[in-house]
Amino acid sequence: MIGYLRDIEKSFPIKDIGKRRQRVLKGISFEIKKGEVLGLVGLNGQGKSTTIKIMLGLLRPDRGDVKIQGHKPGEIDTLRHIAYLPENPWFFDNLNAKEFLYFIANLRQIDKERLKQEVEEMIKRVGLSGNEKKVIRKYSKGMVQRLGLAQAFLGDADFIILDEPLSGLDPEGRKMAKDLIKGHKKKQKTVFFTSHILEDIEQMADRVLIMNRGRIIKEVHRADLYNKTLEQVFIETIEHDRNN
Image 1 (cartoon, rainbow, N blue to C red):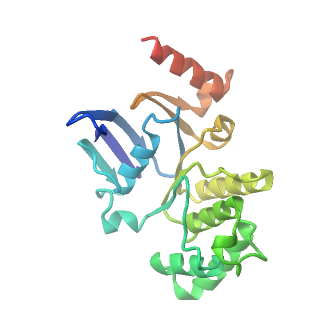
Image 2 (image 1 turned 90 degrees about the vertical axis):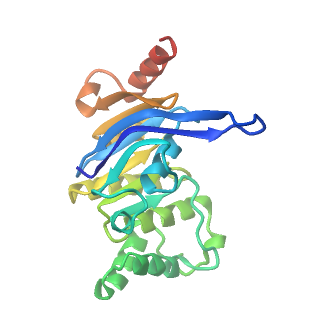
């Protein structure tokens, strides 16, 4: 097991309404297993990004327990095993792609004998060959997303967290991203990702967590989808939750 979240609650102050707070997470619990692709889906504003930030140690829960690789989120011993792609990545735009990936590789302490080869291979895998010396500020959204995937998968982290990894990608880029995720799983590494495109989640995830109103309301396994699509299960689950 890579880690777990148990009974996590999180609230934020409501602007201009005194001391009132809005509960965003209402006791969510799930495990993250080694070597799996785990998907998290839900409508906008239901707590997906907050969940990811807590897993990374960027936010602290009000209550509950989180462990990643046996450590608390945000600790050095945790972060050394994790790579992350945010929903809207922003990188040092005065660097080019090669310079940026060398910077990331050094942060991850990739062996210097392998560093150059790994950077070159990753640039090729994400389709940035020929553009690796162009400064990032001149990149299109799709190129920035490709670079974001490159930095996330560089170094083969044990646990990769991807927030909307296929956003802004053309069909070729989407296939590339899916291949990266599937290839990481073959290495017995773990990927946790969110996407609004349920077909993509269905194609790649071993398990899917459906989130609504700050709670995990259903866990769907690949075997559960033998006669329904994930989209059908998702809509039925959300509607049932609204009516109860």
